[in-house]
Length: 263
Image (cartoon, rainbow, N blue to C red; front, side):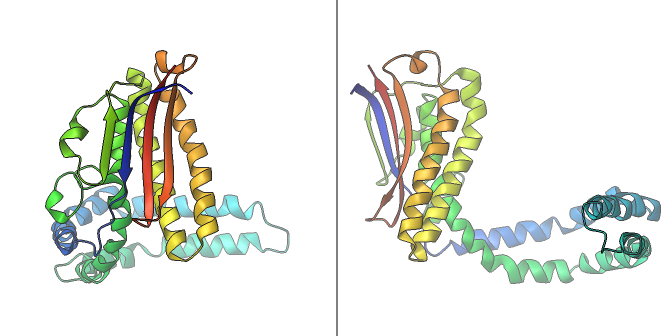
C-alpha cells in the first residue's frame, strides 16, 4: 500500500456572483489600451500593399488550399477570384472602419462595455486557479490547481495562503525533476482547469453521468502530465504521486487530491 509522505486536498472555490470590481477593472484597462491596439494594427498593416499581402493573400491562400480538397462540382476558380478580389478592394474601407471603431466612444468602447457582463464566466476559471493579486475579491490567492502544482515542486509558499478550502498533512518534499517539473506545471494546471470547468458545466446541466465520465477521463490525462514531471526517486519502485479530481457534492464542484506515496 505504501506510506503517504504528504497529501494536499483542495476544494474549488467558485465565486458567485463574479466580483463586479473585476469586471470594472477589465473594462477600464481594455479601454485604456484602445490607442495602443489601433497603433499596433496600423504598424502591422501600414499600407495597401501590406493589407493585400498579410490579409488578402494570406486569407485567399488558405482558402485556396481548402478548395483544393473539395469535389469537382465546385467552381473553384470563380470562388477564388471573388474571394481574393473582394479582399483586395477592402483596404480603404478597412482603414476607415478601424479609425471609426477605435475613436473615443466608438464601437470598440461600446462593445467593451456591452460585453463585460460575459466576463462573469471567468469565475469558473478563477474557482480553480484563484486570484493572486486581489484576495479581497472573495477568492483564494491560489486555488487548488495552482496550490497543487506548487506543492509538487516542494514550494512552501502555498501554506501561507491556505484557507478553509485547503487541507494539508505530512511533511512536504519536492517530487519533481527540476527542469521537467517546471515545464510540466502549465499544461498540468491547464488540463485541471479544463476538466474541472467541464465537469461543473455538466453538473449544472443535470448531466451527472457525463460529469463523472469527464472527471474519470480527465484524471487519466492528468496522470499522463504528472508522471514525466517526477524526479528519479519518485519514479522508483514503490513510489507514487497522484493528482486526482473528484466530485464533491458538498460544494457541488470538484476537489483535488495530490498525494506523495513512499514504499
